[in-house]
Image 1 (cartoon, rainbow, N blue to C red):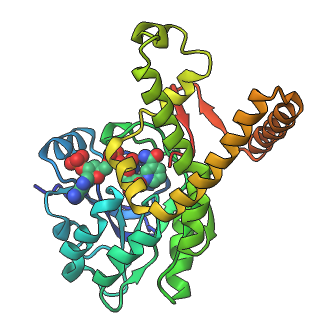
Image 2: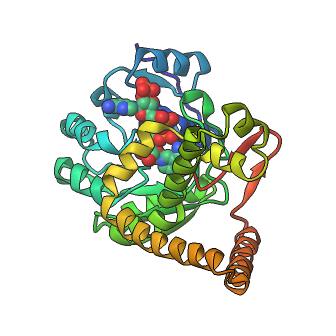
Length: 314
Ligand code: NAP
């Protein structure tokens, strides 16, 4: 049941529709509210449970069980569901999109989304895929917070030739606190494979290996987890559906980078076997410098107030 609320502000968009109200959808809604970017925020959540939580928290101005109903008259539609379902969602809303509106998304891969979504975008609607490089390992509507996108990058891979639409979406993400960069989808997917997707795969793998080890009991894994393992468990707690879809939809880039990674790992194995301390020291020194550069660039900000660890998320 929709719950309409009037707005007194002169907003950037009259009406925004958020399709999917988990971590990303709820954070966008809270950020839009905080910066007064929309007259009305309509939200679609798939399950009755999520819709009930969204109503309870008052996360959006109207909650819709039907995505097509949510996008009606929206000037900006943001797809915030897992990568693997965005094509079918767009097909279901296609006939209801407003002429001149912008459709974007927050999916962690870009080429497969363009392949799945673009065929359902009607003429007169601007499709500008996006990816905020911001997140946490939490999911669901209770996990969102307004500052998630502050001082984070947002990458756009526009499929529309209309510069005004790209400028408007850039202004939107800038208002949420992000720095916006435009690039092509293939370049995005390769870059994110190394900076995000492979690190998550390694975390899932190492936590899985530790859990399987017969000589290390579960309690010892937990007891001594501060020795580096704990950081991996945080990453490996990320949403299983989201990450399954990321790997299935960025297959080529992930496999290419994984090949490189495996070669480098073999070189490390060799250095340890042959006692090549210099090779180990040189690498560790180089990697320490990279960490320093990331901190200098302001891209590592633990949030002690809330116990949240803002990361590149995906
Ligand atoms: P999330 O917290 O798990 O929320 C996902 C939302 O999508 C939920 O509201 C879910 O509905 C909804 N949904 C799932 N399948 C659907 C369907 N078939 N139709 C309609 N809605 C559906 O996930 P998230 O972290 O917000 O991730 C959303 C997107 O953001 C993903 O594409 C992900 O790649 C991208 N992303 C995530 C991060 C991150 O760190 N988490 C960072 C950058 C980008 P129910 O609650 O009803 O199941």
